[in-house]
Image: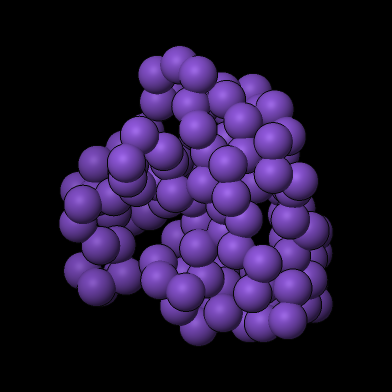
Length: 129
């Protein structure tokens, strides 16, 4: 896994979501590893803004040509924004998972759950299954 596939400045979950803290909110997407495992994303089932979320629980799904994948919240709180462009361009999750393929923002009501640093995430990916 190349360094560019696991950007610095983000936190990662063992479920392959990335998290960026920004203006008191958590911006969430899936990692490059996750999008490559899922293959072509064909539908993003975006949650409603205001939807309450529980830490480590699924709050939305992505559909690919291969499977349906749950996306888990990295903290409890409420959805504060979603990337509505993904309704028309689900492929952005594959093409630019850390940029225009971001999925949702959460206004956390508590601390960020267990996450990994970029180095820890790279080691997690390299570990034998």
